[in-house]
Image (cartoon, rainbow, N blue to C red; front, top):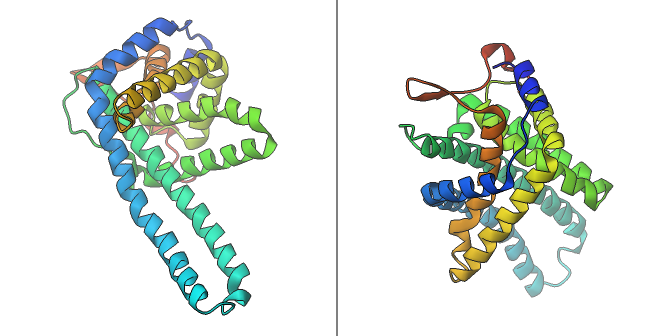
Length: 261
């Protein structure tokens, strides 16, 4: 399916049923809750080393300054700048990792939903083949989010829908150019904004409520439920082509952007 076909499917998308999306999400969650939990644990495994890298030097400087007051006053502005730069780099790296892992989880959702055989590859979009595109899309995600925050609160609410759809669009269309993926996500987000916002909000609330009822730590097991409706929105609008038990990815080599990614 070409990018033009994707646009046509978006333009002619049928109305989505809120109840069906929620019910289907609950059924799929029963199959993928463990995979969602594993994805979060993998993410935490990446976060912990970066936290040490950033905060241990600050702790050392703090201890030295406490024992020798005023010794590092002249270096304070430089230290602050380094902290800000390090923090922004840390945030961006985590966005890249989160973006790639979520896209990988959507592929696993499809495997479980359609009973596909194969390895559950959480790092599919963090490997060499797609890493540069994952970084590029994460940079676009980061940049659009910062721009929305700089404008006001309401633009953030608006862009969160297409940006969340961007992850699932990428998961099933990795060979389509990055610019077309972003455009398709905003086209779909504009057309299905209200129901997408509503279902993800309700799913997020349910995930938190059930997680809290499970003694708080259960929220890690239920967190993935918040993104499952995005999978079914994509499935309802575009569907999946099946051939000999395997699902073809939407997109073709003509749409592949190997240069700008």
